[in-house]
Amino acid sequence: MSITSVINYKGGVGKTTITANIGAELAARGRRVLLVDLDPQASLTFSFYSAEDWERNLAYEKTILQWYGSLLADGPTDPLHPYLLTPEPVNALLPDGGRLDLVASHLQLVDVDLDIAAALGGSRFQHGSPHFLPLHRSLADALGAEEFADYDDILIDCAPNFTMVTRTGIVASDHILTPAKPDYLSTLGIDYLRSKVSELVRDFNRVAAPGPTIDPQYLGVVFTMIQYAGSGPITASRNYMAHTDSLEVPVFRQTIRENKSLFGTAGERRLPAVLVPNANEKVQYELQQLASEFLARTRP
Ligand SMILES: Nc1ncnc2c1ncn2[C@@H]1O[C@H](COP(=O)(O)OP(=O)(O)OP(=O)(O)O)[C@@H](O)[C@H]1O
Ligand SMILES: [Mg+2]
Image (cartoon, rainbow, N blue to C red; front, top):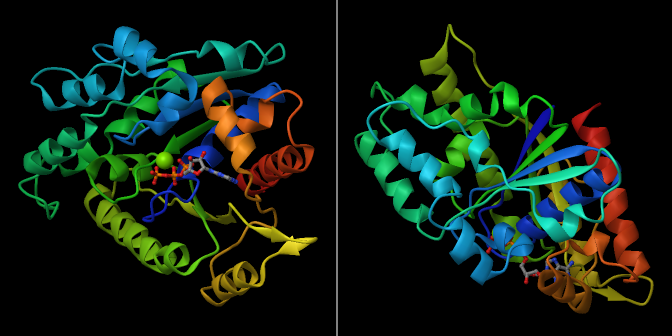
């Protein structure tokens, strides 16, 4: 099994879209995939459930909010498996053996971040706190339960920040993937994100040793929403993609072009774009190739 956090400091760069589409494509190849929505915006959750459905059937008992709530309450933390969901429309399209499960998010998850930080003694995440290790490791421990051993791939959609909930995602991960748009603001934070991850890994391992330490690998940057002119990306995009080469971060060979109608329709149909029937073949091919490259990079 491999666990990957999908993260960028910049909002709206395609994190959720990439998470849903890599997950759906792998499930369509017969793999067992789990998606975990750690973003209070809950965009990944709303990619698979309508707002009404979420409000009626999920919001009060079946989201990661309640699980983090149990973590902060006295007494034992809930196991995570009762929170597993199997969204209908997408799973109906999968072949035998393929499966796409979801742990849903909640708009109030933003409050949990503040509560966890408070439990650690303030927003600076004090390493001396006896809660440092158990809180940082909480999601990793939950995903280590035997109920999760059957998943081939777990993808965690992170919010565009580095707060406590995001940190639990990174601590749980073997890999980190960063979608980015090829523009100035989207590429600006990539180096900073890497240094924040390194800092977290260093702090965590200092407290965790001689127990199990972590070493999440940077899979690379995936460029998305690329505008094409003629047969190739517009010049400005090419310049920003080239700029990333100088940052010495790995970059995925496969990029994803902009296509507002396909990605817009996909949301309304509760299907990731790669599985929408009779849709733009070029874009779907790019998404399939991205999933192949993802597999190759997570299983070198
Ligand atoms: N290749 C694409 N072409 C056109 N639109 C896209 C593409 N990829 C994503 N989008 C759209 O862009 C918007 C932002 O994408 P998405 O939600 O995946 O970004 P995000 O990084 O997860 O955002 P946030 O930081 O808010 O979580 C969405 O409306 C999505 O449908
Ligand atoms: Mg998102």
